[in-house]
Each structure stands twice: as structure tokens, then as C-alpha cells.
Image (tube, rainbow, N blue to C red; front, side, top):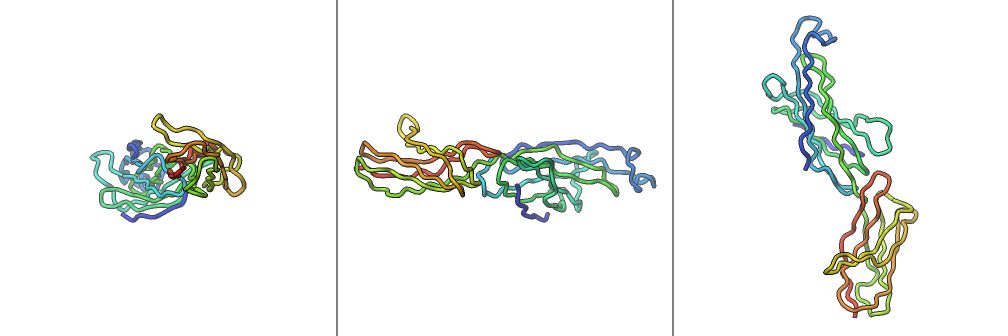
Length: 231
């Protein structure tokens, strides 16, 4: 199997049976009386949720419907339709291996739907899997201006979102024993940048993080947790 990477935009296998009989084929092979192999194809994403900028894989298999044997040496085409696009488009192809397996790497920026297609022709019937979606959370960075503060000083956190989500709300949260507590909020500015601040009134170890709201094709994004010591 040959693996390729395509920019895009732990899944359960999605299955579509292609059982076109030879007499129904319109190509020249069927017209000459050569049997056409009915095919079965599947699609399996490595995961159905990632963070923007992360790499994942979309796997597929192509087998003969009659006995389940793999069909090697066939070209499977991977189609993708990202959030906001009117229709799917071909992003890459992969040739099936000995077991009829194929796999391509993708890096979707927002929610993207995928399917594999064997166009058919020759001795193989056309086969198209159903569509699977990979959801994408917005990536959000969080940098603390000063990790050592005194009570009464201002805790300031800044960062960027990817994709840039101008106007989206960003919350500054503190992790506590009883659950996260919202400290302050702001909005994403040009270029995906944000800055949020909160005056600290109590000492101790403050474990803080930021979270950007879901918006236009992306899920809620959560930053790493930063620790600030307040005296």
C-alpha cells in the first residue's frame, strides 16, 4: 500500500455494498461478455475528532463481494467536503495493497466529510463508501505574562486561535476541586489574537486555561493548563 498525505480540509468502519451485476454495466468490458466483479468498500477514520493542525488518517478497504478477498492494485479516490464547501472534491488517490487496503493522511482545518470511490470500469464494478465526518476543534494557545504574582496583581493570559476566529468568545478559567470556574472573558481579535485578564484576590496555586467557543465549522477549543503562584 502506498500512503500519501493530503491537506484538508477511532472510527467505526462504515460500509457500502456495491453489487452491480455484470449485465447492468454499460462499459465495454461488460459489453464483451467479460464478468464484472461486484465490489465491497469500507472507510475507517483513525479518529472522528482532532484539533486543527493535527494529522490523522483515513483508511479504506476494497474486497470482492462474493468471497471477501482483497482486491489489490486498484486506485481508490478519496473525496472531501469541508465545512462551507458546496460539494466534495477529489483530494488524493491511493493504490490498494495485497489485502485491498488503502490509506491517506489528512489535516482538516474544520469539520470535513470524507468518502472513498472506486470509479469502476474494466473488470470491477463501481463502489463508493458512505460518508464519515471528522470534527475539528479550534486550536488555542495560552501564554501567562507572569507566573508569579502577589494578591491584588493582574493575571494576564494571551494567545492565538487557529483557525483565526475573530469575534469568538474566549473564557479564562481556573481549575478547582469543585470544577472549573470562569474568571473573565474576551473576544478574539484580528489574526486570531486575544488577551484576557483578571485581578487575583487570593493566594495559592492557580491552575488556569482558556477556552474558545465553537464557531463556523469548529468545535470548542481548550488550551493547555498553566500554573500561576499567587502569594
